[in-house]
Each structure stands twice: as structure tokens, then as C-alpha cells.
Length: 99
Image (tube, rainbow, N blue to C red; front, top):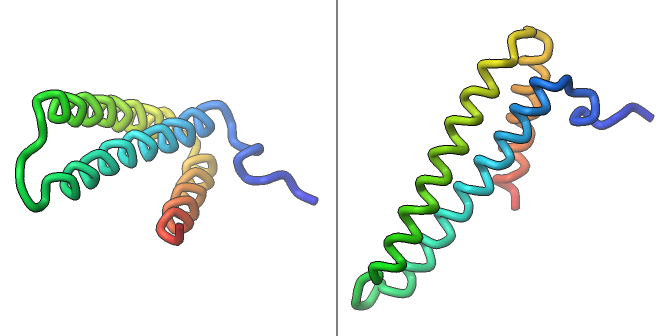
């Protein structure tokens, strides 16, 4: 039986894959809170200062994760490794939409 694709990634490709995963977690955290606040205040009221600060913090964390991912992707210079990573990202993005 062959190894899963993730186990065959080189160091730069692994770093980009991990950065992509972290970026998705931060995006999910931000949008989960945004959705919860939208639901909480949909009939009346508005988020508190603390809630808005938490949203701002989560968005800042996500921005940092996006920058790390962009840098990690740029570090993958081997064409075969880049193709392998792109296929993995495409597959992961497709699977995420199914959950």
C-alpha cells in the first residue's frame, strides 16, 4: 500500500500544507463568531465592544495566517512539488465543502 500524499511531501511543501491548514482554521474561527453574533443580534441590538474586539483579533490572526501561507507557497519552487501541493489543496478544498 502506498503512503498517503501528505507523508510524501518535502519540507517546503509540508510547511505550505500546514500553513494552509492553519489559515483555514483561522478563517473558520472568524466566520463562526461572525455568524454567531449575526444570529445573536439579528432581531435587535449590536455586538459589544468586547465582541467586536474579539472579531478584530480573529481577523488579525487570519491575516497573519494568510501571509504565512503566501510565503510558504512562494518557497515551493520545485514544479513537481508545487503540482503535488496544488492537487492536495484542491482535494482538501473539495472535501471541506462536503462537510
